[in-house]
Image 1: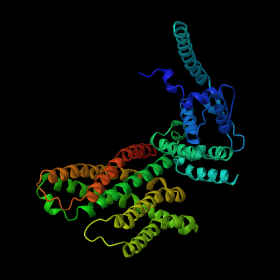
Image 2 (image 1 turned 180 degrees about the vertical axis):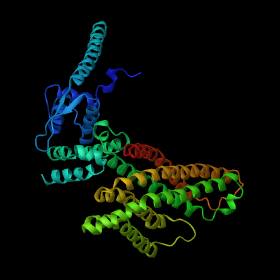
Image 3 (image 1 turned 45 degrees about the horizontal axis):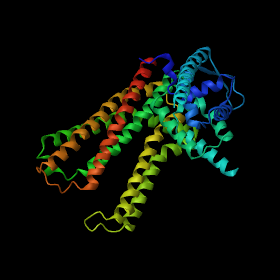
Image 4 (image 1 turned 45 degrees about the vertical axis):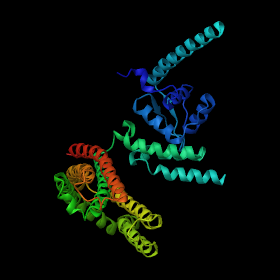
Length: 109
Length: 303
């Protein structure tokens, strides 16, 4: 059975990157692409970005805000923030464990 | 700068490949993004993949709140596109197997499978006539009443595409090198490949034109409901043709492989084309079932 944490898929999943970008505040499409590139070194294609946006919106994890001309900003919802927090804790725990093990392996080598 | 603009324009053109409700919801902001960040080759590929994904896995946020009339119109258009794909496969099958009577006598399944394809074709033609002709009449009368040149163009586009295909076939037939009893590379590349591509393009126009016509002509609910119910029969017809081809192609292989039939009519190009026809027919079944389900639910919701 898929846990709620699995809804974001893999760590590099565009949905996770979009949520992490929107955690800072509301952004429109291009602002998200630029922020994600600066944050994770990943350039999301337009089809990938809007695929993730429509999935997240359908799951109630983000919501659109009033359009700024043709550019419509999005913001993270409470459920989205909670899910992102949960997922990032898992990633941080895995990263911490991995780094500890690498340090231990380096010391014994 | 100019290259960026042309890539943005190309990307904007690819947005047309997304489903209509998706475009209603996202196309403006997507076009703004394409102007801000003109896509490269990977970006264009991402647009194509995104459009395919949107057709296969529609999301609730842009699909759920469709009015029954819009949902019926989209589903009927999708069903007709599936039928065009199956018609293309069925036409290729009929042309390739027109001289296979001697083969069909040696394997009991072959004639049964041909019967299924024929029954599917007849049922499909009847369903298209019952559901499609009233819509065509409504679109024609709307075009005349509104003096809508664009609607006239859309209505004429399948016939124009057919004429272009006919002209292409005539030019290629006079210019192509002779077969001399076989299929030399020049004949295949000079005649068969362009003709196959032209036929596919013509079928694509024929498949997409009804969707565009219905969007512009805005047919009344009663006609859409009739087409939605005729679409249920069309789905059965699509399944019958696909099932018939699924039985026919392996049975033909088995008959030829067991030496019970002369292998003469089964050359490489015939075999490959039959497998492609089978693949096309099977591909249409899933989307047709989905579209028929949506059309049925929308017809029930419309009362």
